[in-house]
Image 1 (tube, rainbow, N blue to C red):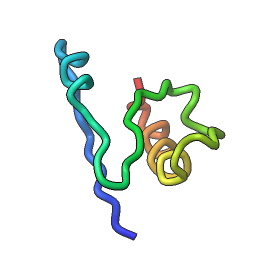
Image 2: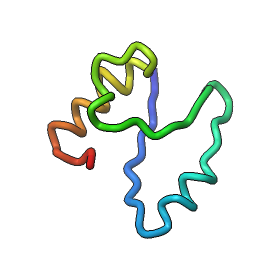
Image 3: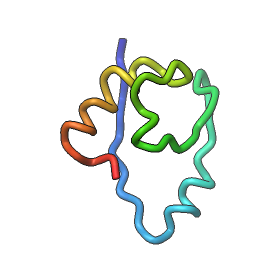
Length: 63
C-alpha cells in the first residue's frame, strides 16, 4: 500500500481553505475530527486511527 500524507498549516483563512476541500476518487468524506475522537473510532479509516493519529499525538501537533 502507498499512502501520501501531507502536513498543512492553516492561517487566519482556515475556514476558507477547509470549505474548498472536497472528497474525490475513493475518498468518501472529508471532515474535521477533534483530537479526542481520533482513537477508538470505528467510523474512521484504520490508517488514520492506527498510524497517523498516534504519530501526531506523539509529536503533540494535533491542536
